[in-house]
Image 1 (tube, one colour):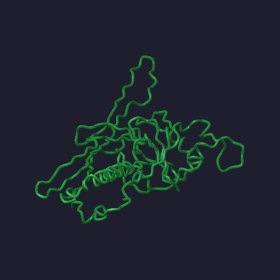
Image 2 (image 1 turned 180 degrees about the vertical axis):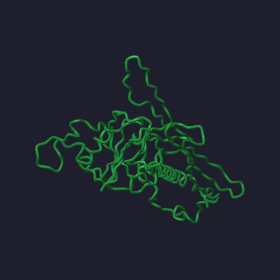
Image 3 (image 1 turned 90 degrees about the vertical axis):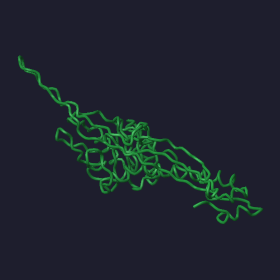
Image 4 (image 1 turned 90 degrees about the horizontal axis):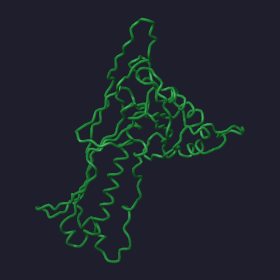
Amino acid sequence: MAISRAQLVKELEPGLNALFGLEYKRYDNQHAEIYTNESSDRAFEEEVMLSGFANAQVKGEGAGVSYDDAQETFTARYNHETMALAFAITEEAIEDNLYDRISSRYTKALARSMSNAKQVKAAAPLNNGLPSVDGFDSGDGVSLFNTAHTTVSGTSVKNTLTTQADLNETSLEQAMIDIAAMTDERGLRIAAKAVKMIVPSANQFAAERLMKSQGRTGTADNDINALSSMGMIPQGYRVNNYLTDTDSFYIITDVPNGMKMFTRAPLTTAMEGDFDTGNVRYKARERYSFGVSDYRGIFGVEGA
């Protein structure tokens, strides 16, 4: 349906002082703090986890060397989605000189809608991958944040706390311990470290105290804040306003090939006239996908 003069009657009246409702600021590109962005030229992308080798074995004198096999373990698939939105302006509205006023305002509104949709899509794996939600799986077939990511060696890797807890000194320190204990598919330690923390807006105050206080938070002791003094999370924290669990927190690790975004087609806009109606139509479109390859790239906690 096209935007007509009847919908914009006030814009035709003289003496109008202001129009409002389309000039809000927006939370833009918050996904860039979570995902690495790669381009794609296919309908979907697949990335395969390889197992590597187990520990080297002792070779006895005169004995043969032991052989090991590498293998594929699981496949992460990224299915690109097309996101698009459009609006139209009637020929009569254009004739009455409303086009210039309408187009500049509504193209901004269109851009905000496209941006908001991308941030919602980007937050979905974090929101839906929490243990109690279990609505987004990693390539191994269990929820993204899980205590039982099974490896080919038969051991489990966890990227969430065994007992969910709110963001505090104890839970954050335990997250650092669990990240350091991560192993590869053959059970070898991988020396994973935290890089930055992602929190919903409701958790930013707790994050600020934990990241910036010189002493331990919430105590009268003269102990130092070990998390801060040891630089355990070197890039600090970032707020994501699209996280739905208000007491959740997430740690991005330095494990490569973790959270990824693939851009199949960048944001483009197009404008055309319709011969039959004379309406002018304006469209925005982009195509992308969000997901995870190696779940070790992120550690998530949903809170108590």
